[in-house]
Length: 471
Length: 93
Image (tube, rainbow over all chains, first blue to last red):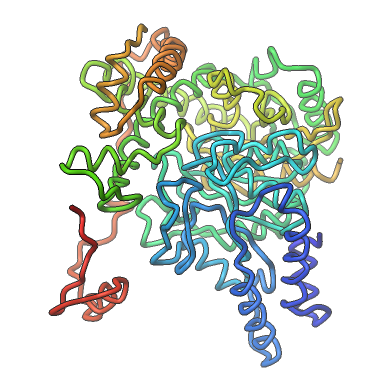
């Protein structure tokens, strides 16, 4: 698969047409998707028509954007007018977007070709991509393994060479963890960096759109297109967008990389060794390693499951058979109508709604929800202090590499615990990136993660880029 | 934290969701494991911790009246049918 940079160059120079590039991706999807199941729908006719438009535009000598001719896949919770967006749930199986999300508008304005929608855990709740109504995604590196989730389809599509880049969403690690499992790059910018207008909500204080790409420079290029304030999203931040890709050349001399105390405790040798090697590789390039203390970060996962479930119980209230979603016509009274219409939610989604509702009841609000919110403040304060001492933090992306499909089915709590390193970024609102760095003894990719402060994505991109050069 | 069958049923009822006997049994065990894990948080001293307030004025657009005369037409265009200048919505019950 050509990189984003190569595609844009090939298209703009006339070496390849957008149609040729698009047909190339469609051919790989046709060959590999039946096994990998990364795409739930391919917009073939639409993508080809768009590609022809771009070819005509080039022929007329019109200005071409930063992503001219680049095929991009979007997660099935991102709206693109006239196309289905189902969150891989039976609840939304017939939902067709009535408007286009800001992120897709920006991709189109930059000349991208939206090639299809990718598989995901139902309503983005999961980290294995096994809760999708369209069936599980398989990891292209080893098809007996999960690709991670919830943006498992987006990561697998890039790893399998079906597309050079895809969009995912990340509420607790759903871009970075599957990127780590599939051996590709995944970036979740800080909270507010990218508009969420037209992205189906799961947990509004944590949801962010992220980019999955084959290398750091491509991720930086696409982030640059997507970032920025949007009047349609009141949580998006007003701040100039740096030229991320061109800032990657800056060396690491004097850059302070924080190693959080105790973060490698209890990890398997493979992951521990890769993270240690990554730290040494960065040090050799002039970075300074600094031990930092983020004492409350270990509580991020329980906070995350209470807060995001509570927000989900509210956000998913809109699927009532009236405003959105499946509608059961057989009910004879309003309560039965709601209950029957909400029946298509899968087991995990129902469970999260029940957890959230339980945590918000007057009996449990203080002990569960309020407590989690207060601990979240302490975690944020820890990270704020850490970034007064260092530029970025280095951590594992996940405590393990990709595991076998079905491995944790009987122990969902073990899966929740595995989100520890990634959900800290969502609880803290931080910018985070996972970059592949070596493999484990079974040949599965190991991801390492950098965290940076909000609105300073260039720092984590730069560190990840220099580490990538060492692979 | 002990989670009972009734806890699951009450939460499901509040969320307007029908949960089968089998699902209730699964959720009861899983919620108990989860809330016992969440109990870790009780060991954290949060005395005096205040929740941060979002400065809404920095993020919310000015409260200006909608002046787009085309809005009604745009809204109607998203519906399949209209009658007497009103959008026709699907029958609920």
